[in-house]
Image (cartoon, rainbow, N blue to C red; front, side, top):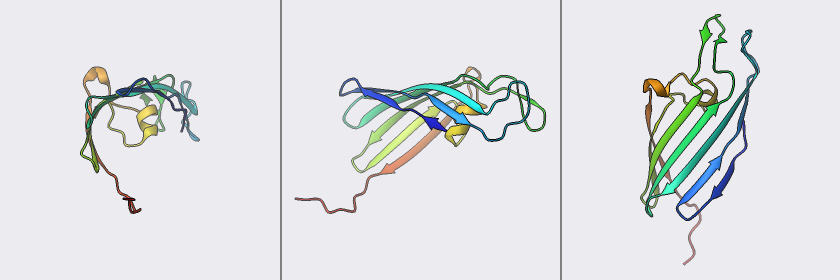
Length: 142
């Protein structure tokens, strides 16, 4: 997976990122619509609601390899080309709590961007939660 991340901070409160993506599969089943390369375009952003709260979003669109593919067993497969997520970040000082809802249940970015089986139009969403802790091994100067 290769991604070019182009970001800009428009103000103290709002930043935006554009992320074209290329995914290469070494092995793909034979079929008229199958290819080794999957292309995707995405945009994501963050809006600072307050000093300790941020609203985040991400939208990606798969450009090819999502309609009428043939899997290893010869079945025809369709993937959802749209990937959408919205999240809330809460910063407590040392911890960053992230709550989000997204239109995929896949764990890896490759499966999220190239083999998403959840469909936004069918209301298939997943809820997520992460905690990040900031620690320092260096003693702070007084």
